[in-house]
Structure formats: C-alpha cells, structure tokens
Image 1 (spheres, helix red, strand yellow):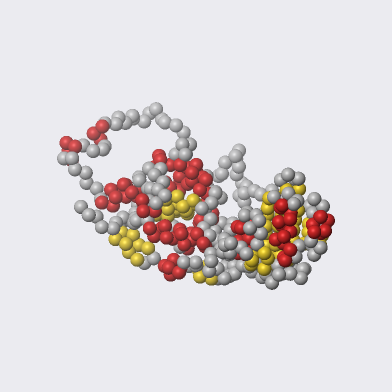
Image 2: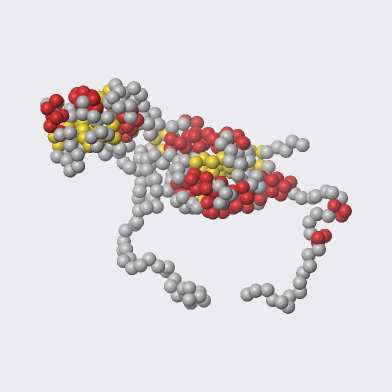
Length: 195
Length: 188
C-alpha cells in the first residue's frame, strides 16, 4: 500500500520520512476510522505493535506508535498518533490485541485511551502514583509505600530508589587496563606450582 | 600419594559400630535436637517460588539428571501449607513481593528460605524502580546461591548447605524472627 492512499482518504494525515515502511502521522480524531479503513479495505489485519512514546521535539508531549501488518500483502504500515491532552482513542474494539498494549502505554506513560474496555494498569500496581517511562521519572525510582500495607508494616520495607551508582554494574572510573585479564598473583601457574 | 602397603589393615567388625540391641536393650539415646534436625534435614519439602529463569534450573534440578530427590527434597509442594523451604528462584518485583511474603507467612514453622540466584539475593541486574533489591528485605533468608542463573549443581550445593545448617541448629524447637520467638511444642 502506498501512503498516498491513506492521505487521500484522510486529508488531515501527513507522511513522515521513514527508512523501512510507510509512516503516516494521523491526528487522534481520525485514528479509529483510519485503523478500520486499513483493516477492512487495505487488508492490514494484524496489529503487530502499539506503544506509547514521549516526544521532546513535537508539539504533543505524548503519542502512540502503531505498527499494522498485512498478512496477505506482506507489508507493514506505521501510524504516529500525537495525543490530544494525553488522550488517544482506543483501537481495541478493532484489534482485540491492542487491549494490553494500551494498558501498558497507560501504565508507563499515563496516556488515557478513550473507550478502552478495561483501563487499568498492567505492570505496576493500581495505587502506584507515577508513570515510570516518562522522561522526568528517574530510572532509580521514587520512594513510595509497598502495595500491601500489612506487608509494609511487618517488614518495614518501602519501594526504595535503587540508583545505578552504588549498584553492582557501575565502574568507579579511573584507569582501565588494556592488557589481557589475568590473575593478580602470576608467580605460579599450571607448570610451576604455588610455593 | 597413595596407600602405603606397610600400614596394618584394619578389619571392620560388625559389632564395632552401630547399634547393638543386646547391649543397649533396644533403646537409642540421643539429643532431641539431633533427632528432630535429622528428620527435618532429610525431608525438606520445597515450595518452588519460581519467578524467572532460575525456575528453569530449579526444574532441571528436579529432573533425572540432577535428581534433587537424592537429598529427600523432590516433594515440591505448590501449597505453602505443605512446604517448609521456600526456594525463591527469580526476580522479585515490588508487586510480587506482597505475594512472596504472604506465601511465606502461610508456611508452617519451622521454615527456611533459599534465595536462588543474583536477582533473589540482591536484585541482580534489575536495579530499577520496579524490583525489590533482594528478597531478604521482606523474608529472612537462610541460604544465598550465586549465579545468573545458578547451575543445578549450585542449587544442590546450596540445598546441602541448608541441610547442614538444619542439622546444626541449636534449640531446633524454637525459632526467632525479627526479635519474636516462635516456640514449637512437642505433643506426645
């Protein structure tokens, strides 16, 4: 399918430069109709992926990227959907597989999918106050109480920030050897036993 | 090295060791701790808390090649009420921590916890907002097993260390947890 077909049907859409597959930016108001058009009239019958994105250089802070696959024509199309006030229409009525993807995008980015049949979090627990994949959320996390109050009371444990620095996978800097890794004590080996 | 032929050969006589009913009158004298610990250490019933890839190695340890039943531990019980050793095999997220703790609470005393692998011991490579940095933050851990994931041999080694620990437990009828003493009563 050429992206022009979609542009012709939805004049508000706009083609984006892309290396691999036709990529179209669709306003949120046209998303549902566009996905239905692609499914019913252009044979894009499989929703391969749906994920939330936080853009830094666009007018909309959040957006959704949808990959659709045509199993008969063997081609993909990618839809960029800028969120309108952090809201995007749900397409899970067209592709039931979008259900959990949309819940994940809501959980991680706080994008609300209008018309979603089950708009709960999917990864973090319900009472978690943040959306962790937002750019202003630190990877280490923010201290909040454990999900279960009684467990928190017995163990005295909270959800603790775990910064990479101080963890096991951060080098403290300084000089890095360029030689082969070897044992510190090389006075003995297989042929010459340790004294 | 090797055996020297000049050493006198010792002949083992059956009555030199073991139990002689004629002398001891069909009574064995031992410490209650030793008996209780012997029984407990040879019938550890694990509760497989399989949360990630470590659980695959845990399954391998249960298979015929590694055969955890050689140590009396093949009775994996998926009900915490029938198990006395929780093997935490995998990454414990904060969302799952509640479940791990509840299942631990449902196990009957005496109970032990094995943290299998890097994630269960320290959080491992998951140093993030979602992962509990070591299951010992919510339950008392007896044995930590390193590895990512540990080989089944490492798990067996850890379980044998646990057996060793159980055998050497003093006051095996009493356990303390966070300052609270739990007495186990013998009803005869």
